[in-house]
Length: 193
Image (cartoon, rainbow, N blue to C red; front, side, top):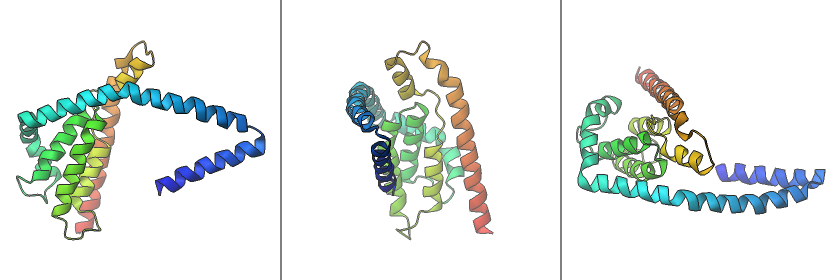
């Protein structure tokens, strides 16, 4: 569906540029921004590789397991339908840890593994379970303590003070997480009654 929306927006922009005589703007934009996009990927790749590697080392060393055990009391309350030592809880904790460090790219594999584990217990394979929905809310609005990727982007683009966004990032992601989880809780509770 998103592909259709993007294709529609691109098509509208091209038609509009023809109608207004600004086709040169579209051509220049495509050529200039394609290069900018490739440069951004090349600049971000080392950061993504570094943090993905660090998260893999943390996973292999058992550090993520320790983190998962620390989060277990909170995760048990957020995911009451899951058994105590469910494999998905470890992946969820790893995903939360990566998101707290602002490493969305490193968090993605853990999120996919968590959803895969949650899907194994799903009796209706075409419908998301309560645990899946709660995890999606938690992942989407996840609290970010250190927005590493954004700080790196700000450094790459010459920001004078790239870390000034840390406090606002913590506030914004905390509010979004709390709001999302409260809404999830009330909808779940309402559904039961």
